[in-house]
Image (cartoon, rainbow, N blue to C red; front, side, top):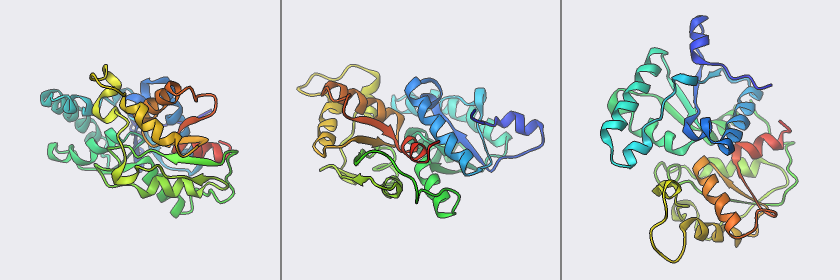
Length: 261
């Protein structure tokens, strides 16, 4: 049984959570990404974080509309969300989606949405530093993990260390870097909307090329910090017919599993 408080219910009781968990479109509706949402909620509950979600009051962040060039739709979606969040006096937001993270953090302030925004790996790292989560006895029955940097977390927001420090916190696992990593990382294609359309004419699909980088490290797991990257890398693993040997998992899933949650 997973406890997920809803903002409207707490508001009706006169309560105010410390942080809003912005679930995002993928985390809400995509069956694979829902598992990432559940894993992160388990970690929040384990750390006794006073959080809530917007539930049916959460709309698209507007990221997809803005990247597609529809500024009018983006502003309409963003203003709706800002009105809801300001009504609930939201100050801090955490999300497992780097696309939402980038939009909420960098593009909402100009429209009146000024919040302290965290990617879930940053927030989990903070919980570890505060002693609210302890992975010193955590363990996974795997050896090698390689990590794929999501573009909207890495290059767009310069966050490379938090995901890696969390992977290294799990006992018994070895983080193996790809030849292209951190600010030299290769996009998996999701950030360029390849997940939502047919690829342009060419010799290779970009997620196949990025998966090839990962496979060179001989990983047991390809870790990601983005539900869209997760889909693209999973498709790449299937293209290379390696799905029986290699899993693609979000860092929140690895951490939750390492604690037996």
